[in-house]
Image 1 (cartoon, helix red, strand yellow):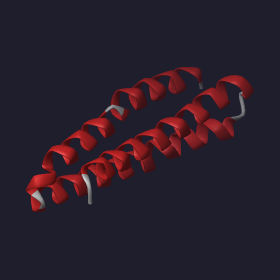
Image 2 (image 1 turned 60 degrees about the vertical axis):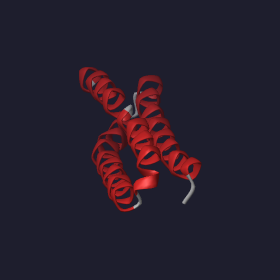
Image 3 (image 1 turned 90 degrees about the vertical axis):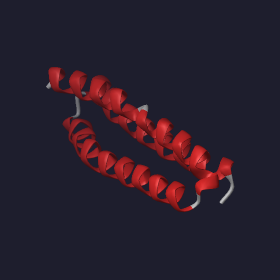
Image 4 (image 1 turned 30 degrees about the vertical axis):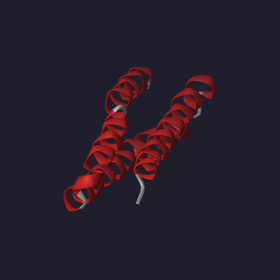
Length: 97
């Protein structure tokens, strides 16, 4: 796999998790439909698992293919941006319910 492909996978996972979290949060803020809150709650669990597995996969791939370790660490860094955003969204969501 090429370096830009590895980083693009990290960006893609980050983008999907951010987009789904934003849809859940703002969907609940706008409509007060509790299905959005429930979806956001589920996203916290499944998104955490997805990001963890992706980071673990990047670590293993980077350890096996040492020439790709920099790209793998960049992809993990991109995924880690989701952590403070998820904490902020969870804090906002829990205070609203």
